[in-house]
Image (cartoon, rainbow, N blue to C red; front, side):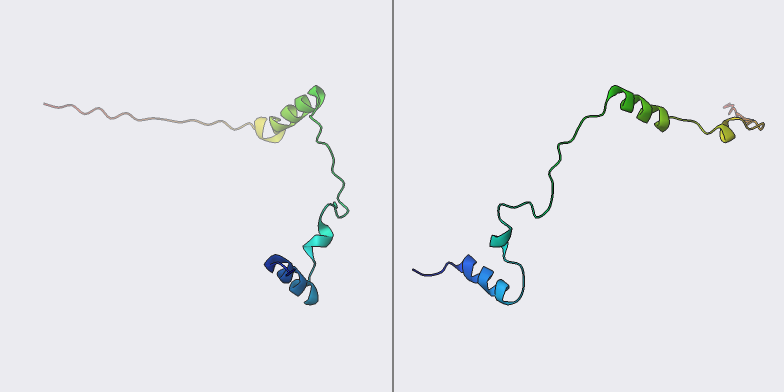
Length: 77
């Protein structure tokens, strides 16, 4: 039986010193799959509190903002 084209390519790559994909099949290669856990209610509250926390140095400034809008009325005759 002849060797398939894909296997020929894999053997050629292996001869060149590259990794053969056949060796990596079915293994996690040192990776431990971990199940993702959902955050608890306390963690969600803490995250929202920290996200919307205001900077007291900016909030307690003694300066104020005064905006003056000058409206120009056009009178047509």
